[in-house]
Structures are given as structure tokens and as C-alpha cells.
Amino acid sequence: MASLKDKVIAVTGAAGGIGSTTAVILASRGADLSLADRDLKALDRIAAEIRTTYKRDVLTTELDVSNSEQVNEWIASTVKHFSKLSGAVNLAGIVGKEFGLKAAHEVTDGDFDLVMATNVKGIMACQRAQLRHVEDGGSIVNTASVAGKMGMPNMLAYSASKHAVIGMTRVAAIENGHRNVRVNAIAPGSIDTKMLDIARQVNLSESDKGASPINRAGKPEEVGALIAFLLSDDAGFTTGAVYTIDGGLTP
Image 1: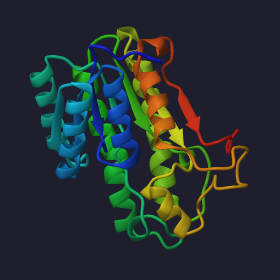
Image 2 (image 1 turned 120 degrees about the vertical axis):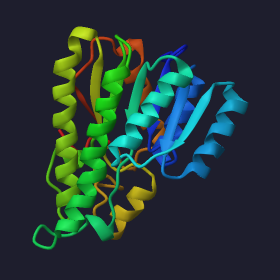
Image 3 (image 1 turned 30 degrees about the vertical axis):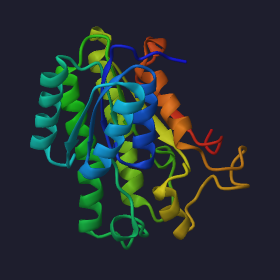
């Protein structure tokens, strides 16, 4: 099990299914955490659990990742509080009927702009701020999707945004290798979260029973374990990679 002892990790989307689970896994492996999300009450509940169970230091911040000023303030306050930043996980993202799950000829400017503001501008802003402060030898994990590796019907804005995340990850990896700062992306398929419930409503669940070699949805804990590995020194020669975690759906 990869150790994160003495590391300080910043996590967006930390109140969500994958985010909250990942936060607990990181804390269980020794990391102190700066958790950010729009839902501050949920963050505080998670932070209290981590402090009690794992005795780790946890900072919580209400954050809209599409607001660059808020992002910069969050990372600055993280470094001020912990005196360093070892790594980051950018999990915040949106998808939903009201802003993305439409056919290509039905997507409005508003639909497209809202998804891009969170999934592309948001990760760009977070990655930018994190790269400015992360210590040499640090690690950043961005969240893409299998939708960023293949086309999916009714998901033009979401799919485009996740393709963009992969591109931004690869550029940052190339630019920061000289500092031994690693930047990787994960590409989850169907993971058992609220987002999967949305996908099921429009028949976009790509790895339910029978749709992939492993005939089930993935578990948030499985994604969290992958993220923990990528943040750890065990992944010291891994950068610019896209780790698919989809039960074998994509090649």
C-alpha cells in the first residue's frame, strides 16, 4: 500500500462520492489534506471524521473552481496553513441533463459554456495554481473520463471537456518534468456515484452488467486507491499518463 506520510494533498470535489472516499484513503495513508468543494457542510463532516479516525490535519474551503481568484486564494491559504504543498487531486466536475446531456445539434451556448467553465477552466485554474506552489517531486492528478478517450452520444460538452483535460495534463507533464513534478490523469468509466445515476437516466451507463469485461460498476474506493498510488513516490517515473479505470470498456 503506497504511503503518503508527511505529504500535504489538496483535493477539489472532495464532498462528492469519489472525492470524499479519496480523501479518507489519502488520510489513512498518512496525508494531511486541504479539501475544497462548493458544499462546505459536507466537507466539514468529512474533515471531522478524518481528524477523529486518522488524526490528520484537515483544512476545508468552500470553492467554485471556475473562479480563478478563489482557486488562487485556496492554494495560497493551503500553503500558508501547511507550509508546503506535496500534491493535488482535481476531481471537481459537472454533468447533468440541464447542462450537457444533449445531442450535438441540441447543445446550447449556455450548456457548453457551463460545462467548460468547471471541467476545463476549473482544472486549468487549479492545475496552474498548484504548479506554482507544489514542491519539487510533487504529483498532480487530474480527472478526465472514458468520455475523454471516445465519443459518447448526448455528451458533446462533457466529452469535449474531458478530452481537454487529457491535453492539459500532458502539456503540464512535459513542462514540469525537470522539477520531477508529475502530472497524470485518470479516466474513470461507470463508478457507483450520483453521476452514474444521471448517466443511467439517459442510457449512458457504459459499464453496467454485460457492457464490459468486468460486469459491474466500479467502486469509489478503487478510484481512490489509484489516485493514492499516483500521488505516492511509488509512481515516481509515471507522468503524462492517462490511467483508465473502466472495467475494460476501452482498449
